Image (cartoon, rainbow, N blue to C red; front, top):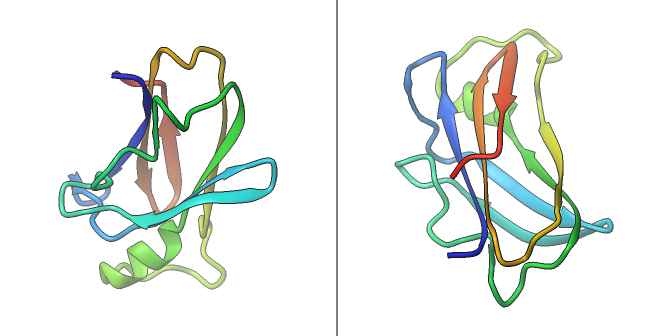
Length: 113
């Protein structure tokens, strides 16, 4: 399967991050706006084999709103409000999975499978 997928894990609570608003952007244009489901994933791939193209992309995750809705007391302003991940797609025949592991004060990502 080729295309682009993502998921978000809440490392503070040790669970999938449900309801995180996210955007996929390319060349300044928003391609997809969605929210994560109860498993912390999107209900459909962000890009499929027909829609993925070589180039630079950005995923933006609204983590500040997620943590506030989860009842976490955040400072004002929050240390992390929006997490942006810039990445490149070089092979449209490959699958790109970009997970986000996040807490109110830090995050990590990697190219998953």
